[in-house]
Length: 408
Ligand code: EZ4
Ligand code: CO
Image 1 (cartoon, protein in one colour):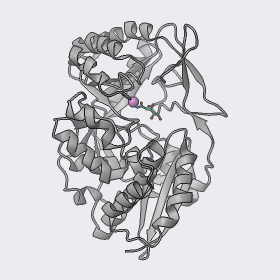
Image 2 (cartoon, rainbow, N blue to C red):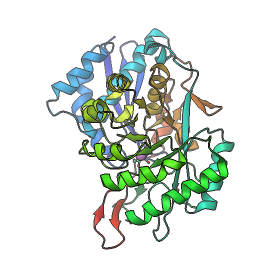
Image 3 (tube, rainbow, N blue to C red):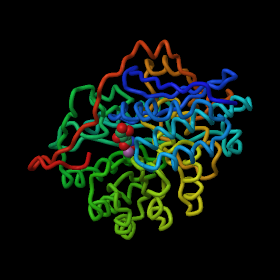
Image 4 (tube, rainbow, N blue to C red):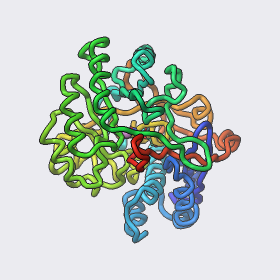
């Protein structure tokens, strides 16, 4: 089962994706996702210039050995670029192994632990009427859980609110195609005053049952995060995400001491080591890492098993900057593990789905990876070539008061 080629494909059907195509001597093809929003070409170079030639000639079936070879053999460990590159290789090899076995990947991971994966979508609006319209559209589309983000009075465009306003977009994409990042304005005190009023209005209109989520997007200090967690307790959130950056994980102890609002964290993390304190001290409730950014299925499985020991569940990152290949990998893993929590699912654009042919499905609010051998996603390389790469950047945040750079 020797690897005969490993090629990077960059395409931009509405937004940028980096994919890895690995082929074996028998002509079996596996796909991996290496998309790192706003830093795509760094991962593409890591793969093209440093991994592709190393992979040729290796045994495609030796997944754990290849993972350790790339992780330890590279000497320079961890980091989003390295771990996204390793993830792409790992997922492509799992795709190949499952295709050889003629099984959907979740079967190799232990088989289905549930009938489908509860998914949440991104409802947003600049104000309450637009938010309600967006929630209604998500409910009409079958969602049984929604993330709630709104504008804050006095601030312009902020994180999480679909830029086109009037709620017409479902695939909120913060990265903008331009030579340099756009800048947004921020005011944490205004935000902390406003958010509880939004959740009060949403609960009043939609009742107690609907699971509601919210993303703080790393903007609060620990004591501000504690305040928000407390003020949201009456509205029974499914989770409050990235309340604080958590580069210093022990800062979450303070948040935990003050609030019972469940906490989700880790979409920017890339190894199990980043979670050592957060998980062993039970400082979070959901792991936000993506298969795509955390070393692939091999590494995510270990991370989620570690989380399971502490009654912490999965909440894998699933914005549209995770490609359909990365999404399928998350779905196979989520179906197989016991401690699945929820899956973020925004749905890719029609253009993206022309390039990536998927077989996963969304029915009754639940996702299922489908039963094709492997991941169940194939990439149309010719279609991909029609959408050349366009540089795009995530925004930079500045305080409204004095333009100090703030966490975005
Ligand atoms: O900002 O994926 O929970 N989801 C998020 C995302 C991230 C983007 C960054 O590329 O926080 O919207
Ligand atoms: Co987030």
